[in-house]
Length: 200
Image (cartoon, rainbow, N blue to C red; front, top):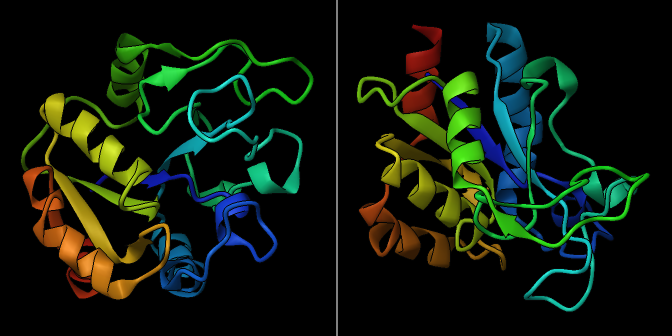
């Protein structure tokens, strides 16, 4: 069962980060999900963001390569080394020198073929018997955009309920989003169900 982590970076997840909010999923991921993955040899694919300027949208830079805010919460021993680096909410938007602290970033551009190729190499082709389970931040933005892109490519999508949160961290908002609009793109699944599947 493939997993993809989205934007689980310290500018979002760590106190003092540029976009930090108190989001319960972060403690769950750190204390329960990551140890489970280590114990059972589960490897995750990862999508992270390089939100330097120039970039349409928010007028300030964050998730800047070379800073603590860019760092992932995922330890290296549970994630695939080939990380996809996006520069907008949708994972198809990338930039030259994305992720490089030593080089100035290029302008954002759309690379849907590159994202499709990354998925094929890390996850494999769409397989309805093996849904992609999404974790990370945020459910109302980048996780949603990732779910849409996966769905459009024929993948079945699930959201691990305890391992995703909205920007503001509201649990009421999260469960409302699972009904509308997220049900159009994927299915919410519980940790208990995921544990049963991964342990066998």
